[in-house]
Image 1 (tube, rainbow, N blue to C red):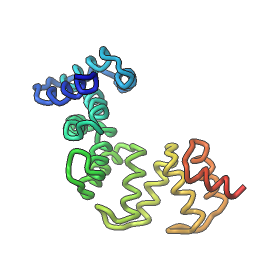
Image 2 (image 1 turned 60 degrees about the vertical axis):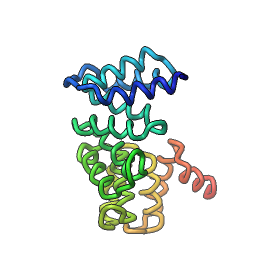
Image 3 (image 1 turned 180 degrees about the vertical axis):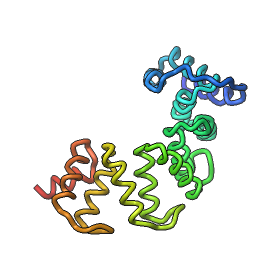
Length: 206
């Protein structure tokens, strides 16, 4: 059994271990362990999994990240454990799973519900994704004003996708008064972070 398969077997089997509430890790510690585990460091993986089994929300979310793409059913189960504790990042990941059908059937209404929980805590990625759902009308009533409001909140936190979306809305006047200077300002901020659509626009309009 290769190392990836061994890790995934542990991830899946650990779901059935009873949990004791714990909050031993800081978010940054969980991030560091996750980064090391991605590089194949077994000690970091073992620590992360042990803390997830103890009930640590940060660790549970990261174990979900490690499982996603390999065992999506295990991934969403770990995300749910973390999200049910109120962790905004995990709530966002639950939204991703329901929106894309990772480990569950696609359910846009459920995706929007989880994004809304994350948005309530100010999580920028959820703000952008929920804004896109309001723009398209998937899972929520179509509402361009709400979409733009969410894009703005995410853009002001530095989310490059929201900055780009907001910028192009200002350029086209879709749902908002045309303001080319403000539109290009947001697009430049997005481009500075490497957002593809913004980069293409600036390259074409030099």
